[in-house]
Image 1 (tube, rainbow, N blue to C red):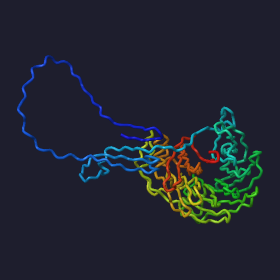
Image 2: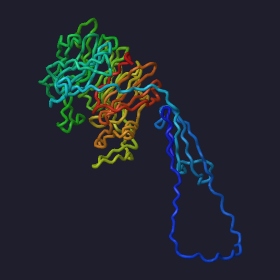
Image 3: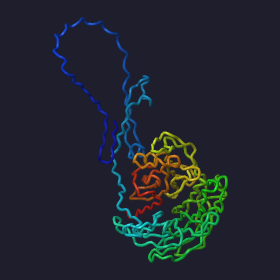
Length: 483
């Protein structure tokens, strides 16, 4: 039997005895009853039966069984007579969860970006929305469309009825976008880009006229970029990604230069200052000569956190001084009760383990000026299927373990075809402060889910919701000003 309280509804499932009676046919007349025989001798006194024990355990808020806390009730027989209900003696477990009065996110609309090509999407042109930003008023979304090499604009003045405005050509493949004032900064991979000679540029787009006002050569292949909360600084990750077909992508054995780095640009006062390069070589234990920075986010102190995914490393950069303030290995995790085997047809059997798996973080988001969260997707050697919260010293404050894989399976979204790789593959992280609540959202690319956590107590994140998305979420944007 189990009980689970979810909101105002109490769900109850119980196993009950089922009694069956068989009815036989008529075999003829019944003879007279026989007499009662003499009473038999009294039998020996039987042994006392085992005591039945019940144990109630309080569940804290954020537990896997009850996100708002509750009580777990275990029962069974004290078979060894020690007066305790040992783990092997538990025969029945039920859970009663505390009622939830939490506010929740509700999907209000989905905008198919193909409608900017054809109103009915009756066109074979490949298109996608990857990374999204918004104008300061939160009423216009701006997204990168890599297949069409365009930047798209969507009016969400009425969130329930998004309206496509237009998409503008960029002259290359956009990888990321961030907005400051009336300017959108877009990282663009040049069509001439190769693994050996990476090339790209920064496009500055006027969001009012939706035209390119300036371009800046960035001397490599850009990936993520971010604008500081005060609007004064721009950080651009130049990944210079590796060729995964060369030596099976083993950068540990054979580094693939040129190395990646980070540009820091002063964009205060409406200008675009001279880019300053922050080198990242010599930091990571894995391929120190070939850093591949992946994602960047900036806090209120103008400190940028940069993930070096394949190198399993994290770097903190002071944008005002263009210096590294700290760097550290992202670490590894021991995963238990996961599905690490792919079957056809699919079988989800979360009974296996993987030891010392490098986290290899992808997306990263500051929670406050001292803490940030990483989505540990993995690539080169690892991928821990979850997310991690660090402080600026590099200490792990929280790690989610196997929880995201288990949630994906619970809701029917687990990608068994990725079991032998990285499971649900968390892609990105985003933070927003909503009406007094610190909210962290983890986007799971392979399971097409968003995991919403309350991180008001970052040592013990509380799962609030699991939300289905369109296929393969990549970028996530919180707009708390619009609730």
